[in-house]
Image (tube, rainbow, N blue to C red; front, top):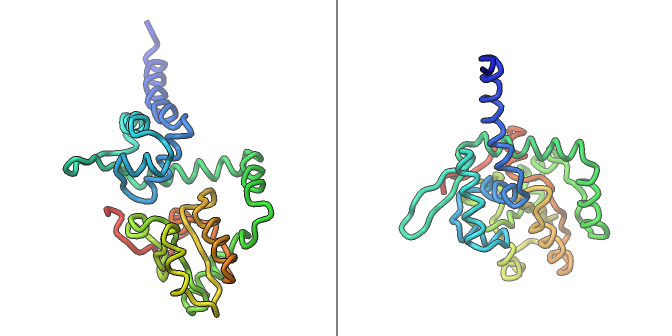
Length: 225
């Protein structure tokens, strides 16, 4: 018969392993990252991640079984959301751990950004000071549904797909700072390239909403959108 102490430990670590198994897929990690931006339908998540709807649904079911995400029915659609803000905090902690322990993370990022102008990290404190003084224009280039769920105070919502249409509305006498979902989101990279090609002075804010929230900066919006 198994020792009661051993049985207790086995049972506990088996439950912990459920979370580990659920996040063992790169695709499921990407879906969690997207859900950190706000609730989304299966169709929207599939579109953003490049997966089929069927594969997206399967991955979400695994995350749901581990109690990392929850789902609500809205007519014909199923809307997924994080089970708790702790899930996003966990995801960010894991990301920071990987950044500090795996040199490959920085190498992959540097290869992607090499030669692109305006991609240097922006000092957070300096940026917020400039925002309060209206010395810069801050663009949130994520989809509007993510902006509505939460955004940096003072930021303007100009989704990347609509950026070309709004160039005439942007000031040319101020520096423009673009941000999106975080250091591995390419929306702000593409936005800065478009802006610089049109003669704007633009730079990229590397951090995302979750980084600012974790650092205690004010976030405006309704996370339940």
